[in-house]
Image (tube, rainbow, N blue to C red; front, side):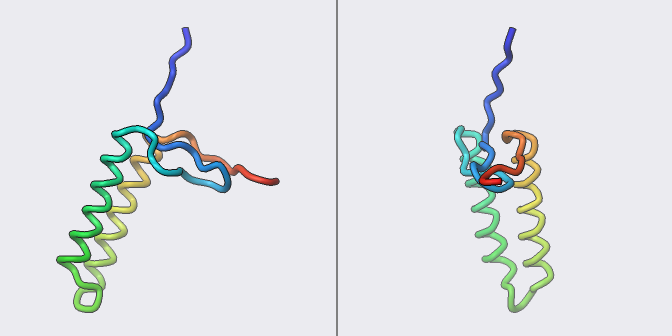
Length: 81
């Protein structure tokens, strides 16, 4: 019996990493990330609070990478070798 995995994020065709989402769950995750970035930009201005701004962006990005790692196709080096 073959188990089919439904990845939220496909591996990139060239290079390492993931492409745009292919399932609705991935798009929701991507929208939450974009909304989080907007909130960080609104509440923590880079000029006034650069540390909190940077921390917010880094934490959101690490969260997105974690979701891609868990729910995405295994990344690997692809392309013209």
